[in-house]
Image 1 (cartoon, helix red, strand yellow):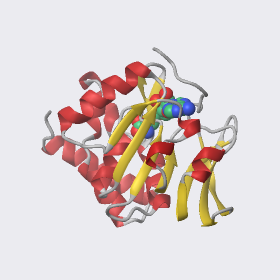
Image 2 (spheres, protein in one colour):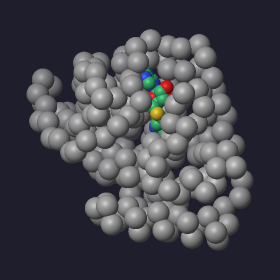
Image 3 (tube, protein in one colour):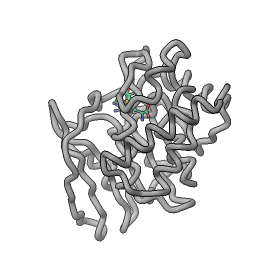
Length: 215
Ligand code: SAH
């Protein structure tokens, strides 16, 4: 897996673009600068790897737009050692950005082929998630709960109760919610039964679907 001066130069340009768009968190910017996004795409699409755009990764899914990754990651406010659940593994790119920030990442993907492919790929490039699984993220990961942070990287029609339950008190859930375009929500668990909700603009995600898929 090559990561040469040209790739690093393109990545620096992408970082400049993210700063122009309002991303200020230095730690998040350097995590994005450190992860070679072009590794997550077919080599023939290199010119697209560092555009600020979502891109198809097969199985009808996409690697999220860098700006979206930057916003969601900033909202999580990751501290080294945080136990983070990601719903929607996809290409593994968001997981790698979280790992680069020192998070312990648990990730769920509902599409079996994508889960298998990404799991193998992450091992190959040397980014270690704590746990990757094939399952329905609506249910969270009760066996490993509670989590400091939870990030959902697909459009949720409603906020899954299981995810709220599986957060530590003081923990945050970042989730795009709604049909068509989504509002980015951040829920902070203030005590066992209460949440404070903040809203952060409109985004467009592939849908969060119920159940597992065998393809
Ligand atoms: N975080 C990913 C973004 C992938 S797109 C990345 O960085 O590349 C969203 C992913 O969520 C898709 O792969 C989709 O299959 C998955 N997904 C949708 N509904 C899901 C569910 N209920 N549980 C787990 N994954 C789900």
